[in-house]
Length: 384
Ligand code: KG4
Ligand code: ZN
Image 1 (spheres, rainbow, N blue to C red):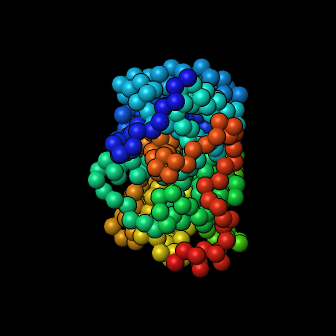
Image 2 (cartoon, rainbow, N blue to C red):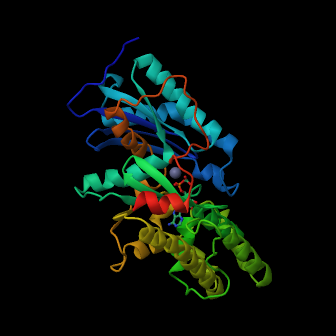
């Protein structure tokens, strides 16, 4: 067994591994933030037919994929294990069985090469995806910032005094916003995942008031709630004559080839298009209202948005409009969904601080990014 010591001074290379949900991913990123390789093997097709991620199937696919995916990332980067300074792996949050595959593999690799192991929070990874992108464009994000993670599993708003410190300001009390997209989509017959489809279709209808409304939150006003959106869509589908069009869309889904927007439009009358536009507009209204509220409560000077829903066109337009009070930063679409480049990037400050994980560490499916609970009192005095 060789004991590889991280080289100092010159740029170092970190192998990142991500298996928290339904993407098996590996990437090599150097300490200057350059992505040398990034391989993502998606299990989307496998889970699509079940309308959501099936944890047992996810673990099995990660076990199948992890060795070839890591090998491909190393090959694409043109590196051998001796050229690495550390192995970084997602430690949580995520599905336990899925996380275990990546963590166990990373531990084995660290043990056999003597490389240090770095445990990375998946959510810190999402924030670093944006930093990777801005570094590439030689732009700098001003801190303190708000970090907003919007995905299928998270709707979490953090106050970040710097890129490695996060205080939770508010989070969803029930469904995540991406989950709401997926559930409304499945209800209407557009299948899973719903975000990209509903986002694309929403510009083909007009938002009308009535079906959806922004929930008013008791207690922490910066919390979110998306379960009402799903219920409202279910109720709408039950009282409107939409059974035939839903059946036609489900038929399209079984067709084999991925449907285009034109395919969907052919079987989606204006009333349903308007419903989708209303859903998208109200969901974004809810997200935006809390961000604006958080901006007035804190001294944040910018907004970082990440996670799968960060690719939503309506959300980007809203947060990047000229009158929005602070500059907002989004990752490029390829870095907005789960990938391992963001995990390696989040390990850069940990490598510098020699913040290594022992080989005995275990993943934590509900790992938190912050150290504090949401608390409006603390927020008002601590952040500004
Ligand atoms: O971050 P991600 O790849 O996985 C996790 O959930 O961690 O996010 C996937 C989620 C899904 O719920 C998907 O429907 C949603 O992001 N999504 C979108 C869009 N693209 C993906 N939601 C709204 N608009 C989109 N354009
Ligand atoms: Zn994610």
